[in-house]
Image (cartoon, rainbow, N blue to C red; front, side, top):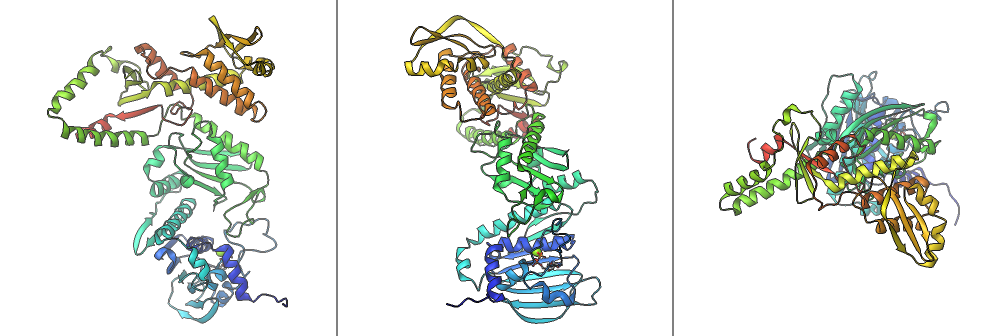
Length: 580
Ligand code: ADP
Ligand code: MG
């Protein structure tokens, strides 16, 4: 076999394999070209999941008629030169997209610049130019791609159902529209308008982004996220961070943009997951929008053919910046728990009430019963004269597990164990990190018999155990005695607690970082030493818990990411009873 240089056509088809994974990659490349051409209106039309037709039409700068044949040549670009190689600000720069798409489809480009008197069109089929001629076209570019991958049947076979491909396209347009919140987008799928953004006349960055977020993700997203905008050295971070209880089953609602570029880089998703680790169970994912802006020299965008990934010069400091940024902002959340839980509660309640109304012979009887039990102890009638606490005043406990409290605007139902667990956890952590752990001396110390081999390992760990507020000493040849435990723990089986902590320290003594270990142990202690579900509480004890929740960071969710309370506003309650 003799060695030959590949033909342009083959080179383009190979490049197409890299740049174009599926129709959505072609859509992304075309829309990014429109953005680079300074368009402020971009319309996208899709048919059959993009397999038979993709049209991207913009009002951008257009392509000079004499340069149009060049635009579809490989490595031909207006965006890159030696001067700006290390300072790329456009989305494209590799000059690969148009020739790649053209080599595996039937493509028609119509374009006109400000200066050209008339438009020009070029028709290409499977990489071969079929015609170039004048055309009626307003300023901007209109590109039609038909029968994508028709000349590469192997790739065609890998495409998924129309629905899947359409959804993938919608997701990428959502991301591009979110990131480019000053540009207007319309997406039509099989003639149906599925995404449309409105022009708003507002120069304020926050207002524009907020408006775009509500258009794309809805108001529920805004209600359950907090805006942040911070500068750290040369970096600026801004966007919306979801409160921890507003979690999701996957990373679909994580929007990360770096220097106005849509990034799909798992390692960055992991960074955010780490930042939320303390508040969300491992199988759930936070929802957020994060714009990261940094000097171009800090980040290499040329590491991935479809430019989905980037490489940071100093990933370690980015990591610590993101983690502390997220944590500091989430502290502001305090007791706030996602409103999604309220919606879910209403949904469940509504189904339940409509069902039970059908089943009950005399509904009035049952509702008066319920009212009576709530009215039973109303301990203080003049609630309105009291201070306006966000979580209100405890009214009653039910099933020895939940607290009902009345706020100025409605009621709050608190899961007593989950709430207390979070409070204990945060207190323990702060005491341990500040080396100020308060202990209580046990009236009757607890003796625990141990295996000899375990005892040997344990003796070396007793000092460490003391840092966690557990004072344990060897007792005879095969036992230990627990004399003190952290003061904050109540309701706790000392023996089980001590064994659990000892096991944790033995198992993970070397493997996890100190911080990770402290957090894990605090979480274990909190789980053991918190008010159990099933324990009766007095009104003042309940109010005490509510006040602590209000001042404890992250108290809207327990250590496992479940909400600690659900709020029903009077409005919601009126909806339940059909008054509204
Ligand atoms: P790149 O974007 O990396 O430069 P492409 O193959 O995507 O490479 O595009 C080649 C060139 O065609 C671009 O550099 C640009 O000059 C021109 N071009 C493509 N699409 C458009 C558009 N929608 N509006 C104006 N110019 C465009
Ligand atoms: Mg491009």
